[in-house]
Length: 232
Length: 273
Image 1 (cartoon, each protein chain N blue to C red):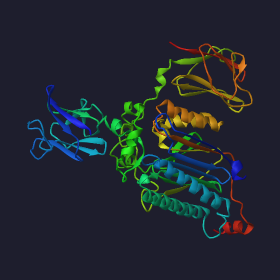
Image 2 (image 1 turned 120 degrees about the horizontal axis):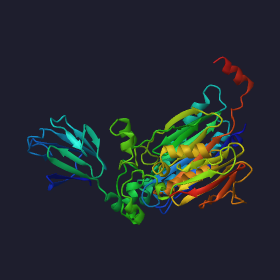
Image 3 (image 1 turned 135 degrees about the vertical axis):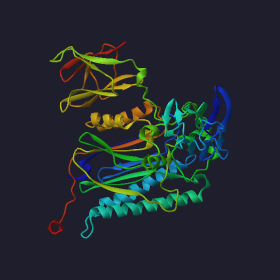
């Protein structure tokens, strides 16, 4: 379960589990989190929790609500967000244990109405799932590879460099001969796409399989020679 | 042109890097103009059972139907004939999965997402449930044609969450409609005219959770001349980004027209409509 950590001047005052669908924050006593301070409005803000996601909304408070220093009206809370109301801070801690406890149900698609967890599902816990506890789209891991480019060696554009920044870069002439260089976490791979001729690497024609390019390989496609090289 | 010649179809399914078995099920037959993709859910091996039932039952019933004189009717448009048959067959499969789940404790609560595409008479009828999707690449424009039946999609629609925030949602995999979880089911059905050169992608969330739409679009635009390579690259991309779920893709490229042959009196009748 996600939780909030209430603090003031660096002093932790309270830990609040987000176990209600609506959790209200304000100065008046009927609030779920009562903060008895004049800078806090009677009904200051509310946190709505839907399953594993929580949303913070300012209830038109006099002094406003900040998240990570920015005033907000409505905000989708993310792990480690810091909410400020006057001098008080609430740190949002997403439940990173969901993944460890119930990985198969957690990440697997499930229909909302059939929500019961069964013991046998727990057997599927694997180290890999445990590390990836949030299900956000990860930024592609392509940065692991050093940057690379190809430099044209002949033809009208000889000397020109083509940076291989995208996951796929096409080379050649559509309809005649096309090859593609795929940028993957473990290297740059050239593959034949269309045409009767296959790419030639260091004088050898490739087959339909992807070929992993090495630094300073010379590639020939549709009569154009080019050198592949790693940068930096 | 016959359907088998007009459509190029490539099917790939991969367990991904984390799961021990594959709960997706796929089927495609260019000659019948049919493609089915199901992403099963439910504990243990029940997900495989549900998705397997969905794809095999629909493959059998719809292949027969589409191969027959399905669209050769006078008083109804071919679309409504195919659409209503599709809904009927989905209801049959739904009941079968629901009953299997009720009769076997191990299968309790099993279900599956579904996306079915029927190509006929220069058009496409698609039915779907849950978060398995159909996309179309046409003239460089990559579009999602199905709208997910999911909590996240509902939150997006109601403006509760925006697309940027949705990337961080923890409620990613909750579907609001599925096959086999209830005694009745309401599949969403749509019809689209098809153009020569279109590329269609059907996929499970193992692809779309791992790879964003722009990368998918780039892959299809770049590699559509070589469909098997495009499908392999999509699987690679999902696995390179973590491969946390089963990944299934069906790619369908339209190479030619496939109008339904009509009798002379039907053509004549069409003029007066």
